[in-house]
Length: 464
Image 1 (cartoon, one colour):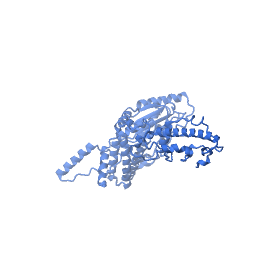
Image 2 (cartoon, rainbow, N blue to C red; image 1 turned 90 degrees about the vertical axis):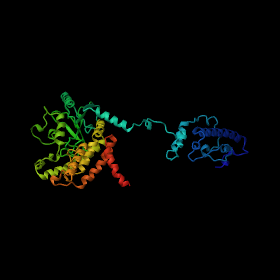
Image 3 (cartoon, one colour; image 1 turned 30 degrees about the horizontal axis):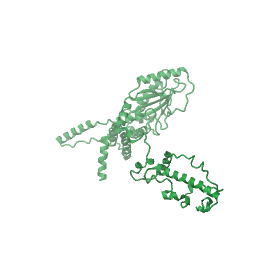
Image 4 (cartoon, helix red, strand yellow; image 1 turned 135 degrees about the horizontal axis):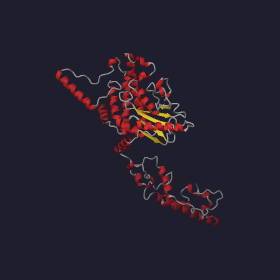
């Protein structure tokens, strides 16, 4: 840009252009003053803070003084007036208010993607981030988190009411108009659940939606479901108790029982989803929600669920049927482990504390069972305690050394009597599940020291 393009900047101009030049000079003085304010406001004596333009334009004091002669081109500060009019001295600069905080934020935004040397951000005011409540000083330690999980689990009620169930399976399905008898009967069910629930079943009901109920049951010991958490959503229809409640199982897409479908259907005579006779069917005068939950836990989550399939019970007394039942248990336990991971990573609403606390407490036993089954033992069999196992091994070694007979291997395949050897895929799949469970249980604060030490010991030779 040439100064000759602006008549009011050329020497030897007329008196009218001289007046414009005087106004022009005053405008440039305002520009210089604003320029100095920006440089001084951004940082005192810091070279990084003294750069105020995106093109890294640096203006020295000498360069600022040369603006009047047009030696430095700075289009941003020129007004291209087609009529070659003068600047309005009364308006120029008087309405402009310099906002240092906004200006500093704009500067900081330009450096967001730059990898600055250590210490630079701390020395430049406008690169420093405002302190927030999420700072390192406000983070809880792992021990504090674990203690909090333990306390919440300890005081988790077996039965309680909640305000809403936004993630309930039937949340978007209104029950319709119901009478006073419906309300009274449901309140009666609530009272039974509050007083008579087994220790391994927990229930939440909704204050705003009396038709909704959520229950979780812990898988019984001695079954392939042991220590697992199984969630069910129920809805009382407007015709309740003339009609049984509708129940949905949170399957995670897995069918781990002939009565529990991957789609969430619960197949049970008491619910009217399967044929039944006599007391197996729903009775409006005597049947209750408590009865439904106990039936699911006792009749569905049993030791050999394979025989729950209609017609399969006839094979329970022959070797072929027993072999198939054991294979079914192997698959069921793998699905149960996957269900544990599903619950840990996405705990149903109002049961987050139970999930965290339960697996914190039972994580060690679950991992021990996984190891025990991978060694060839039957799924659902009692896993010996570590102390008992060490005593048995010492006793066997002592007997072997005194008699000269080699002690028996404690890790025998209890399935050998059925003449079946597990496929290699069982151990492969369990090893993957074991690692995932170990990681999740660690997060919840479970006692996993033994397993972590074993894992570290195995990895050391490979690293060497």
